[in-house]
Amino acid sequence: MAAMIAVVCQSMREGMTARKACLLHGVEFPTMKLWCSKNPDFAAQYQAARAALYEHWEEDIVDIA
Image (cartoon, rainbow, N blue to C red):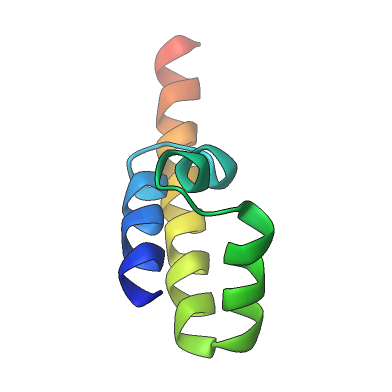
């Protein structure tokens, strides 16, 4: 489970949505959310990946504009 969280979060940091990252790595998005709700360490990893994803998108938007 921890390894799956790590690879999904890495994909998110690289610009992939959480749902697409979960699909790519063979885990259901609701399952990922459940793991995060039950484990504070997983939740922290997910939130950090989410923040990195938003920064990635921000840079893409600026480049496009």
